[in-house]
Length: 89
Image (cartoon, rainbow, N blue to C red; front, side, top):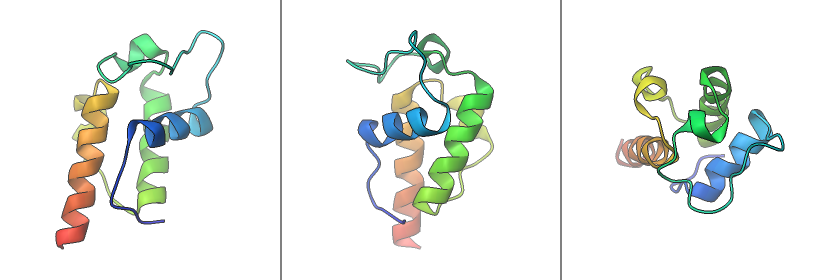
């Protein structure tokens, strides 16, 4: 599925599907600026999440995304930027 939009709800869904969510993980409320680590998602879970985003949205994210996107807001911005590049290209 290729799409032109990626929202916090899309990210929450992919996080839950790919990395799961245990009782300690709360993805409700305003989580845009919360660190993924604080939300209970470590690098392996984020790697799985990024892989799912790439497959579902038919994009290729830079290797730096994992290192630089510490919050949902930052990851959403990166995904959106790549989606825009696909539309232009």
